[in-house]
Length: 161
Image 1 (cartoon, rainbow, N blue to C red):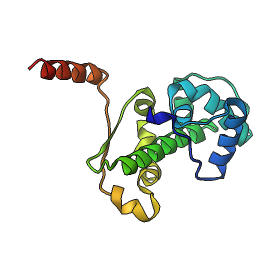
Image 2: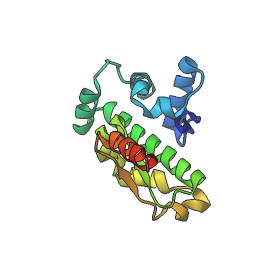
Image 3: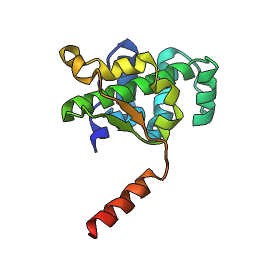
Image 4: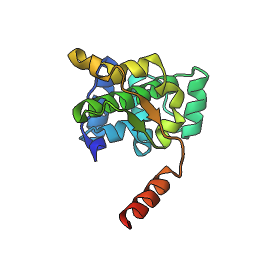
């Protein structure tokens, strides 16, 4: 349950977002900031922090608006990609995952274009004096929705031998 580690803000916008969500949620986890279940709360907080009017939108509408350069949706999608890649970098460094990181789930699949930007990759790799450790660590996006079932079947077959 590594997603329940506390979110670590890295800039003024993220600090303001963190403080806003701390008021309403008490504890601000990476899970809250990055998961589908946290989307509505984080989107609303993004609107409040950026001074934009909040209108509840579906994930598809948020993404469509962001792709058209609309605010606050663009800021929201960029933030989510930054937060995911920061957490992935932290966890890769903490666990010695030099062979690579695989991102899975609906959020990562929806915002894949934001996860591939130089900005997001920098968030993954930027670890101060340890940045070179993750420089060549690949980040892959698992897009096959059946992968968990395939993995479970392979595990089952392997344990029966």
